[in-house]
Amino acid sequence: MDRRSLSGWGGLLLLLLLAAGMVRLLQLRFDAGDTYPAYSSFRSDPMGVRALLEALDAQPGVRAERHLSPYAHLSRLPPGALFWFGVPPATMGWAPEPLAEALEAYMERGGRVVVSLRPESLRTQRGPPRTWTGEDSAAPGEDVEEEVGDPGYFPRPTPPDGEAPWVNLRARWGFDLAPLWPVVRRIELTPRAELARTDEPGLPGDVGWRGANRWTDLDPAWRTVYHVQTQPAIIERSWGAGSLVLMADSFLVSNEALRKDPAPGLLAWLAHGHHRVWFDEAHLGTEHRTAAANLMWRFRLHGLVVGVLLLAGLFAWRNATSLMPAPRWRNPEGEDDAPAVRAGRDHLTGFARLVRRAVAPPDIVARCWDQWRASRGRERRVPADRLEQ
Image (cartoon, rainbow, N blue to C red; front, top):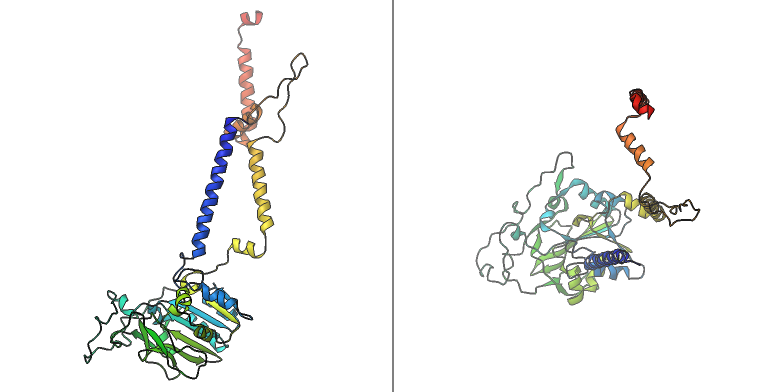
């Protein structure tokens, strides 16, 4: 094997190693899941909820999976527990009317919808975040201004033309949302949410809490399950044959909480005995859309793809080199010479392509006639002395 061939094989080997390294890096990145939003079931870091999904799916008789379809497909889901984790607090003010109707129809069919908010205060959306160490709180006996239902927290969005109108989710479901401060005078560095109901067996007396908001102006149908210093933190209400749970914090379901401060009784209560549990990813921006590649994967057309790629490779190989062996030429003595090495095609093929590019098919006969007449004219003008020679 000559040096040129060795260089080619060495370059190919380096490219393969580079491609394998890139694939491994991408695999490690997607295994961690930090490319997905916080509280996504694809994340295995402290900010994800993948541990909860796998723990529920490992329980006998329970099937936990991700829901990647838009909310218009909620009508296809069988009754079960639908988890919406990591919802921004500001989005609890208004919602598209089809989304509210789809969730309500799912609950009326016996489903359970659990919505948990990100642990961020509504105040951080209008100003700098506060450090909750007690120094920023109101002094004992000082009058504080209640900001319940402050329209500055939930500005009404303007839907684009042609889209469904948005509805006031707080008025529709009978709740409101406001920051814990300044109603709560002092927040510990590691606060706890305490159990407010005694008719729910199996629930822990207190759980870890990182939430910065509270539920207010609750409809009588709501029941407070956990509270932080008498402020509702986790609430529940019946809706048709199902139920609705609102949590002002998502820390309880995160991978970090399951490792440092697990509350299995509360997590089992969220599923509420359902055998099908859905972790919604569409509200976090991760949706499964029907595309050609997805359809080919679903209908197992892998062999067709491999066959097309093989045919494309053969076509490229055929155009790069001839499949026939190089001809052997005979010298006048009748001995065989070495095979003639010829790259590309012969001169006739090149001439035919040149004529095809320069002359249009309708003009080929006229061009041939003109060339013949010109050649005949040149033969008539040959001098007589040259003919004698």
